[in-house]
Amino acid sequence: MAARQAATNKDLESSSEDEITCADEWTFKAAAKGVPYRLQQVLISWVFIVASVALLLDFLSLQALVREGDNPDFFAELCNWFGVLSCISWFLGFALLIHWLRSVGATSMGVLGASCKLVAAILFNLQPMTGTMNDPLLGGGAGLWWSNTAGITFFHFGNIISCLDFYLHTAPGADTRKGWLYHGNLPITGMWVYQLATWFLVASNYMACGWGGDVQKALMPTAAAPVFICQVLGASLLLLGSVVYAVWCDGLNLQH
Image (cartoon, rainbow, N blue to C red):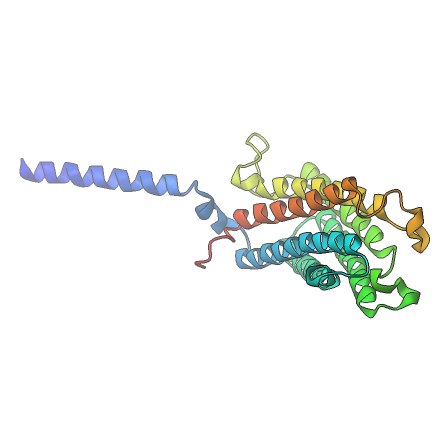
């Protein structure tokens, strides 16, 4: 009788362990183990998180700079340096992303979308680089007038191409019958968040762009509320999208 009871208890414990294991398989942490070249994706996600935070700080310091005029404080003077950090991070992140896409055998459309964003990052780097040079022929402290507008246009088109790629070619692990927060659908969710972000950034850039290098030709001054709101929303959504990708690859777990 005692032996039978012991065997029953053992079976119950085994069944319970199986249920726990089965439940654990559905957690994001367990599902993330199936992400190919996961640690590379973790690195990419964190590079994009840094780029997004630096971009947000860049916008905030830019607003401080245009409001304070000839007497900028320390934070306002960091504007171009935040821009440098952000733009270099975008370039590094997209270069790594293209390598990752090639490694996993992504579609040509997916690689094209990432390549457009790499071109965008190159254009982004021209503005803080020329702004730091402070050459009047290159726009002075503001840098080249057209590089950010051209860059965000490429970035936005790249996001549209990436979303179209996800629509036409179901990503491995994705399930259209499940919600936006299903683990396999997180890359799609993150990309749509990115696209929403660049809608705001396109709007802010086109509103505040000094066409032909003449700030008087801008539709709105940089300090205008619609420009500032679109800048902050765009940068914040880029950060959110990057965090979504970090969750997908379990990048927020520091115990790797």
